[in-house]
Image 1 (tube, one colour):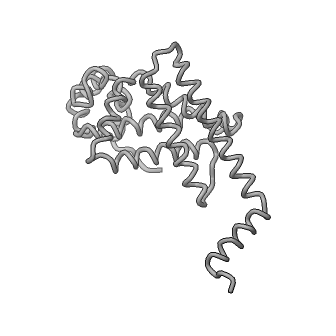
Image 2 (cartoon, helix red, strand yellow; image 1 turned 90 degrees about the vertical axis):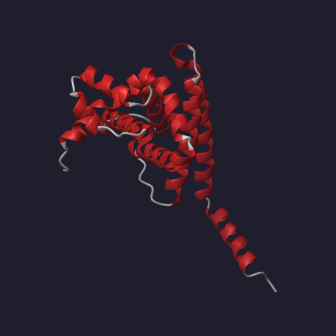
Image 3 (cartoon, helix red, strand yellow; image 1 turned 135 degrees about the horizontal axis):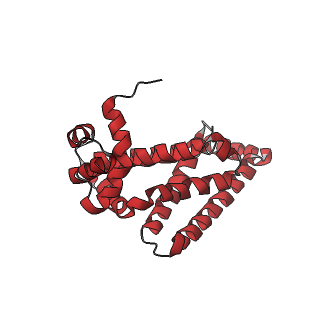
Length: 217
């Protein structure tokens, strides 16, 4: 097991609190100072430990949300759920973790949308969707591995945007939106599974592709 350095311990301790204070102070050292005061960490050490850029602070916050999600969904907890319910619970719990920092999350999205941060945004999104699928029990290594993560990325991104503007009690509009999106994905996955399960279809497609490559004379 890799040893955790003192500075890494401080980063992990402060990351979520920095996001919550970014609601008032933006993604800045002021938010770092406020989080340090809140949790009893020396400000000088906190400033030394934390990233200096806005994008770095956002990235660290998202990593902390990932860690909190992973800590919440133990193997025993996730095993009791169907696959659809696992994905829904993972997305919804992620929103709940970010709830205290919702306005800061809105600013974080704007920061990640800047041209210089697009590569980071792509990496962060992939890391998050990969974690959720792994927590859900996915072990695929073929092309399906990538399509699942791309699909979940679309569901999560659209749900996140809906959540940011949701003023309903208990985020009921977001909840209904998420259910609809997951239902659509499950229908697509069912069709894909039925297609993969049909040897007749696979043979016919193979023959068709073969004819394209080697047309009859």
